[in-house]
Image 1 (cartoon, rainbow, N blue to C red):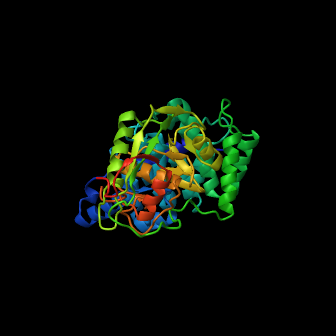
Image 2: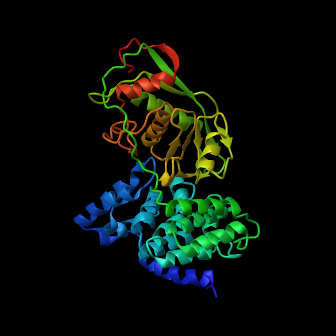
Image 3: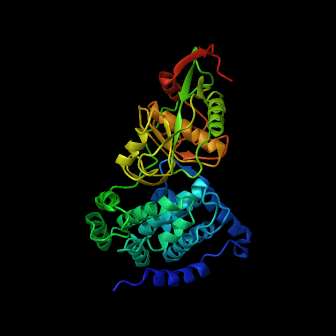
Length: 430
């Protein structure tokens, strides 16, 4: 007989509340402070195409999971979503308790996009941990998706979110993705039951569509498909100081927020992004950085759209967002799929086409250069993995000296797609 979800979680939460304490004197030593700061720097970076196993191992590693657990419980920490994504790859039994504690009593402002993403990622991350043989994580996911469970602990999580009415449905969908990541035969059987309607967590929810998507993910992972990578064929590396073009090229862009986004893009913020991006792209910031005569200008009011649920978990949902309206930029809640499955992507764009999905970021510089990076994909640019100063580097930073540069090839691509605006006399732009 299946154990009660309430009794299961009561036991786990007692453990979790003991193990997951706010950061305190234990981290007071200089070496521990340095160790902690390295982890903070790693999770505060924004990985455009998601957190991969390689990134997690290289930048944090299994010996510093305790720092991730501490950060998950710190109310004011501003990159909780990446903490959860790193735990997907590195988490252990202690991390299970931390995640269940977080689901029971989420910390931080629920309207902050990073906190909203952290909540959505938590059930999926339990699946990543279950996939490494930690059976308590699988048990938790089976309880969340059991017959008439109403999501179990997820029902409580939803009531503490920014949008309680729809978040429970979204969390149950993410629990299904967790079952897929577990790569367990019991999990696959549960997904098949959810798809066929023989098990339903709630009488008011249709589970067949999300369950079918999760089964597709299960099959992809079983076939050896790896998570979305930040590596692509690099852009050319040649560069110069001044744009030889004779005309400014202007991008009149429109954007739309998904109706479920907890902190939508505003007109004033979009104008700030355009101004910041234009100044950085039009200035030679270091020897070899092309000062490119291109300009970003918002040309309409903010739109809204409702394709899918503001969550991109597969190619169909990605395409629905891209095609939802005439706006180039679509602001969504979370991205877990672009060219393939991934974890906590911040942007996804068509190559050589009109269509960009982005999530909200707190830092102005990082958000402006994210939009510039994704526009670069639209005009045909791929990643350049060799120099963090370049716009097309796949890792975003709040450092204003990074993610700002263009090679002459980059600038030429931007010129090829923009609208001719006014003469710039071939002497640079700013």
